[in-house]
Image (tube, rainbow, N blue to C red; front, top):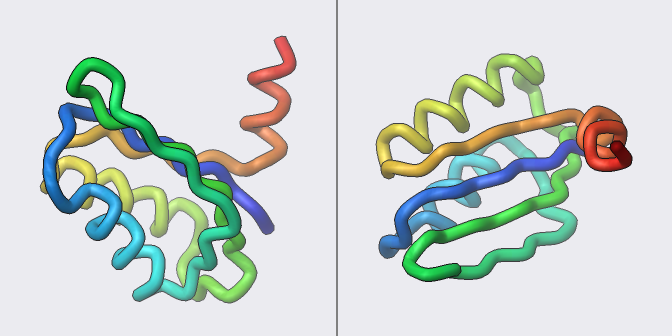
Length: 89
């Protein structure tokens, strides 16, 4: 299964490292990544493959949210199909 991770917050050192490390620890493969900084705000979208992840989707989502809170950014995880459906409207 593939999913979309979005990360938004005030730019600071280590955001990509924190999120990608958490994903690597849980066998989540990053398929594509786009990140930019807009007027001091960090934004990132990742397409990830969850096939090898041993956690339930909800458990991974909770871990990402918690990590985001620790580093001061908002993190969201959505199934790819849901993301695509929402963005077609």
